[in-house]
Each structure stands twice: as C-alpha cells, then as structure tokens.
Amino acid sequence: MPVSPAPYDSGNTASVMTAGNVTTSDTQMVAASPNRKYLILYNSHATDAVFVSFGSVCTTTNATMALAAGARYEIAGYSGQVRATKAASTATLFVTELT
Image 1 (spheres, rainbow, N blue to C red):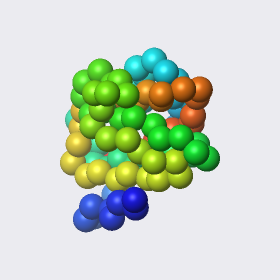
Image 2: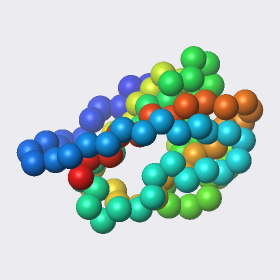
Image 3: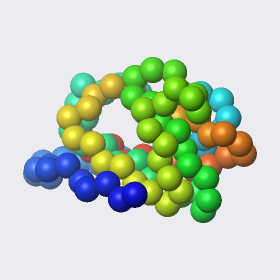
C-alpha cells in the first residue's frame, strides 16, 4: 500500500543515499542522528517484504512494519536508528537521509 509523504520543507538540506543488504538477521540500516530532518526507505525486492523497526531489535514477529516489495516509506522528524530483517533470503533496502 503506498504511503503518502509527510509534509516537509526541503530548504537547506543535504542528502545521502545508501543501499544496505537486509538478511534474516537483525541489521542496523541507519544510525541515530540528531541532525536528520527526513528519511526515505525503499524496498527494492521484487516479491518479499522487509520488516522494519524504529529504535529496537527487529524480527519478523516484532517489527514496526512490513515494508512491501517495491514500496517506500517516508518519515519526517525521526532521529533514532532504523533496523531491518527479512523472513528468508536477502533484499536491498535503499535509505535516503536528509539533514
């Protein structure tokens, strides 16, 4: 299900995009950053969801959300860490962080 972007003023920002491998183990995708203004997560896997957790250990049964294949999630004002895992195999999670 598409997620509507949060309202965001993009003035005077820098952005960094990283691509991280998500496996069946809990993995920190983004460290906490007090300077973060906005965050975009994109699951590039063709068929599988990526389980995402904000600030705590991530498992397939203890996650904030399941980010569907091909979906993106945008969030403003969150400065904590982001963790992810998958039920099987691996996927690439693209993370764009604006500061």
